[in-house]
Image (cartoon, rainbow, N blue to C red; front, side, top):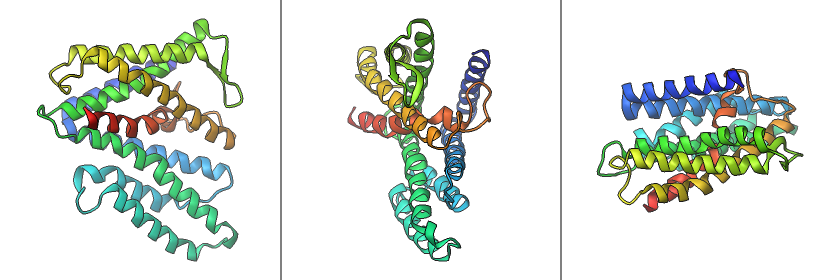
Length: 272
């Protein structure tokens, strides 16, 4: 628990310093680094399952997909790059040394591109949202990350204190319904708090009450996203996606809840 709390505080310090020092550019490149490291760990788990994804080429294309909304949206949007990746990997499997693995290699490599960088690039899109205030997109991205990640913290603490009813024992034995409820309430409070203290940086009408109402379903989606990663880890027969972060595990264990909330958050923010 102590290592987890220390790592969480350290990571938030790094995020805030990076954004405070380098602004939007720092946020975009930090998200890209997280995306690439998450995709790398995903491919490593696939290898533990006996798969053989084209990881090097996949990581290069993954980085480009994540950066596309910020640096070349007109010439190479994430959708265009994803379509290009299908062409590249379809040609690549012609030279696959193990013919019986060709279909699986193509499918899992492309799934890694869709599931990690294509989903996480929506955070970059959020940062680039056109708004009157220059930092609105960046604050919205931080808001979404905080809502998603503090759900984990709230669920953990509430589950330890009051957890009795297992949520999905066959997927994640430690998760409870009481913990999930605590996580959702924590996220709602965090979302409302940020909206209260930063009203000018957020879109007009994004009141604390509205922020809490949006945060609650996003937090529930973050829990689902975490459960999906647990399914993948169980298939790979591993407890953590990596050992990069003490008390947390790998980068995938850090970013898992963002994979589903990033596109959902982008859709919601686009409607504000």
